Length: 136
Image 1 (cartoon, rainbow, N blue to C red):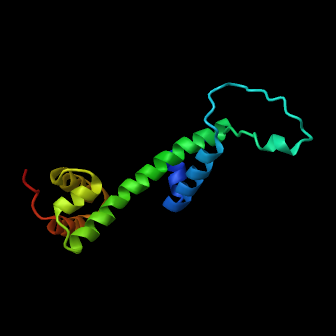
Image 2: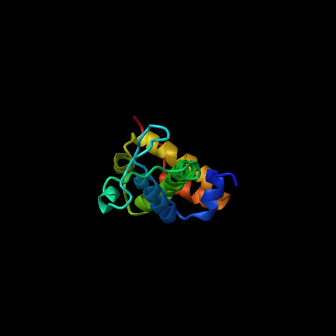
Image 3: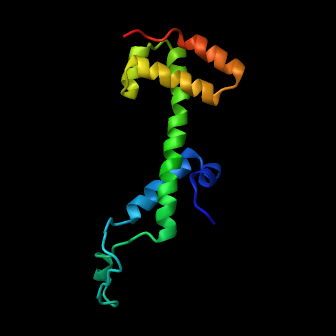
């Protein structure tokens, strides 16, 4: 089985993908050493305190693909938030501040998302809602 963002995107909702991503990222200790051998006393419960977990190859590839899935799904949700803000009366200055962008960049991101995510009729009304591109 090939682990790709496309395969996982169809399988996981944003919440499930983010939860799994968080779980996997917390499991790995971040060690860069290869094939580390520990000489622990198997009968001592204190060895569990120093137990370090490393992801296997399958899990690490899943972690990478899930990161991309979460990024894509979160990025796609921007349109929902921008449309809601516009309907509520927010201006492009406010929307831009929330996104960490300039008003022009926010408007451009909105119109690009509208063209990519909406059908022709919904895109037309979304563009009307956006109004003219903010000036400099």
